[in-house]
Amino acid sequence: MLKGKIAKLAVSDVRFPTSLEQHGSDAMHANPDYSAAYVVIETDDGLKGYGITFTVGRGTEIVVCAVEALSTLVIGKTLEDIVSNFSGFYRCLTSDSQMRWIGPEKGVIQLASAAILNAIWDMWARAEGKDPKQLIRCIDFRYITDALTEQEALSELISIEEEMLKEGYPAYTTSCAWLGYSDQQLTQLCSTALTEGWTKFKVKVGADLQDDIRRCSLIRKMIGPENSLMIDANQRWDVAEAISYVTKLAEFRPLWIEEPTCPDDILGHAAISKALAPLGIGVATGEQCHNRVMFKQFLQASALQFVQIDSCRVGSVNENLAIMLMAAKFRVPVCPHAGGVGLCELVQHLILFDYISVSASLENRMCEYVDHLHEHFKSPTVIRNAHYMPPKDPGFSSEMFDESVQKHQFPHGEVWRSILEKNGS
Image (spheres, rainbow, N blue to C red):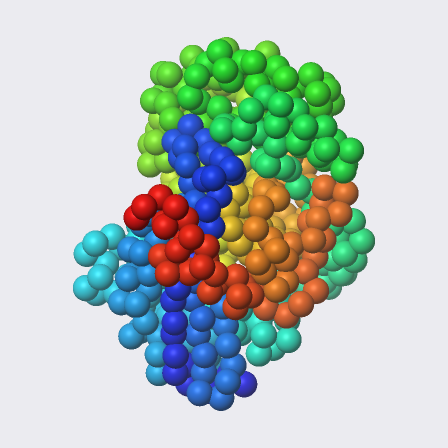
């Protein structure tokens, strides 16, 4: 199954009108339509792989164009060619000698590369009848980092995996407190989440201080003093503003402030981290980090206390492996970003691998969950008692239903034709 040549690569602009109900709204993205550049690759012997990269509406067409431009580097190769020199293939996509001029290992090229690489990982996993974590766990990385003997590492690996299959991986919810939700909606969703077993909640902040004080107070009173609260500004502030603003929210005891400032400002994050440390508030970031080099510098500068990998922002599994290993080296917990269509489905594989084969720890660790759009995937995320349950189907859990893709293609799918006609477009 690895010797068939990749004969087709198709990419679709798939958008869901989440802005109509303010799902996903935050201080910088007031009306996001959760979207994806959706890639399907197929070999001449019929093997398929499915991959996505996440976007929020306008601009998805640019990523689609980038995927099409990169497709010539994929078509004609066999899966065996690719996985036998995966690092070489990764560099071929992310650092093509001409296209790298518009941004080597960053920006739209990185997003497009992630979509293709996610499809390759899905195809490889399907060919082997496994999921991605099973493909890469042949090396126990704790053996490298903690100097366990090979036999000790294998024994501990089996024990940890058996435990995870029973209990799942802890999740936190962002779905209760999008910035555009009313207090009534926030209260209702939070109450429901508590009855479902959720103990970790994230609140979007950053647009208006008094509004945020009211909303954080409401959430903290509802969840009580023992449950965890996180806040997320989505890059809204400059450095001094972030320190001042978060200090005023410290009474609600947030575990972290997420993306307090420009995601490229590593030294700014370091200054914020240092200023907030006496308050017991950490800094979390990573969903907008372009590549492993940025994560390296964040870690070296002690600029974050929680690493938020993303399955689509950097170069898929390949680059996230390097980031998880660096996080383990610096003893910083990995708490992935998953606020978007398909991100929960993808990132669950990465965080389960991190726990089973890298960190073996759940201390201060959790994975984001948003309760939107899972019904469009053939192997949707399974949450039980606020925990991700390990996926059972082969592949990267990234295949969408054909009907969903067709209905939500922009601008000619049924859903968007109806919306655009109503708006007179």
